[in-house]
Amino acid sequence: MERKYHGTQKGAEALFEKGNCLAETGNDEAAVKAYTAALPRHDSPDAVQFALERAERRLLRGSPVNPRNTKAVWDRGYAQGHSSQQ
Image 1: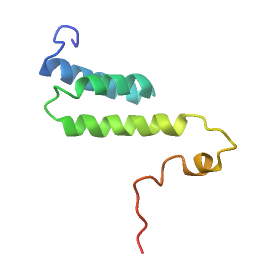
Image 2: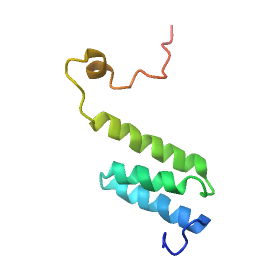
Image 3: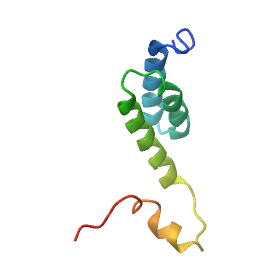
């Protein structure tokens, strides 16, 4: 369906659903590609962006790091963007 409706809102919806299926099966790399392609024409870009960011975070967590880089080993990006509350 995505090919038949390429560049349209229906095509974007198909790509978003494809991304959801790919993410559910653990193929986050392909899901990110589908979400990215769906984003410009989808009628709910916030939902697509949320799913895209979630898949990207899973990819980041699954990527290897250099064990000599202690910041990367211990942080893995979880502390980025979060301020401590006092």
